[in-house]
Length: 86
Image (cartoon, rainbow, N blue to C red; front, side):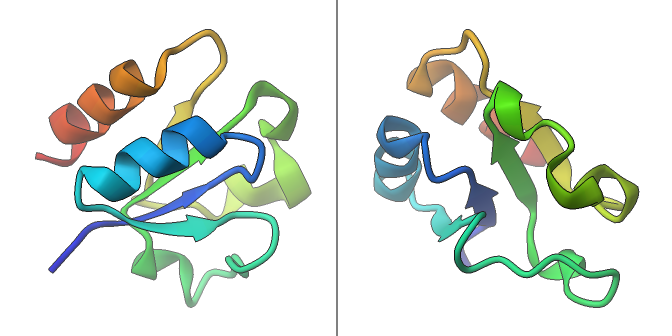
């Protein structure tokens, strides 16, 4: 089963690389509806700096890994996800 990652729409190069690496990529702004009941469906959230507390989501992320993509290359983000998700 692939890992599910919600990612900011503006991070297209990262989305493509994650998809190629076998992750199921969900568009954070358009598809992922975050609530306390469904956040458990996502293994990680990758945000851009401008999205850092988008809609107060840090209050409900729970166990999901959160990666701020600011200043990181797509390769670094994929490596960090592999490392943190196991």
